[in-house]
Amino acid sequence: VTLVRYSLVTTAHGPWWVAWTTAGACASSEGERDEADFARSLRARFRGEVVRAGADEAPTAVDWGALPGGFRGAVLRACHEIPPGQTRSYGELARAEGAPGAARAVGTTMATNPLPLLIPCHRVVRGDGRIGQYGIGGPARKRAMLEAEGCRVEGWSVLDGRLPAPAGTVPDR
DNA sequence: ATACCGGCTAGCC
DNA sequence: GGGCTAGCCGGTA
Image (tube, rainbow, N blue to C red; front, side):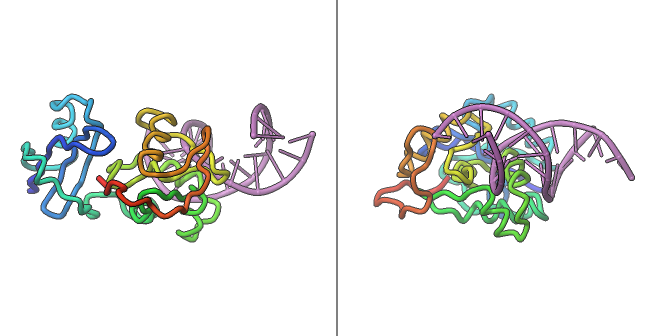
């Protein structure tokens, strides 16, 4: 019987719902979403109590046990390590997992990211530098997020995915 | 088993 | 640079 708490947190990329267990964050959703809808989805996914808590209690740690394992879990962990202001390509993540042809599967994994922002799937772009797709808000949102983190972007492409994050770059979440 | 489906890529105009 | 194609792979029905 797990206790899941949740709150609406203010982030550098707007308001987001975040839910967490004692181990860390376990679910997230865009802040525009209806609260009852989010809470309902939590009750469907996790057995036990779901209660609202204060935003200041929201963790930055991830409850990896509540997330998918296997290939997807490994890719999510790799994505989690991409620093702000940097990007990696779908193909790079695939190669890092020893599955060099699985770029497209990485894309699918990003599209079903259970913790957007905390697991920064917006930092995963196409191999040719183009921004690629983004589930919530589309490529325009993805571009805005990358720019907000200090990535140099021209048109729909990132110029350098490995620039060090400028001073004052906002932390994850 | 088997047949799709996708936040992709490499190759070729 | 752009546009198109076939190939790719993990996940899901």
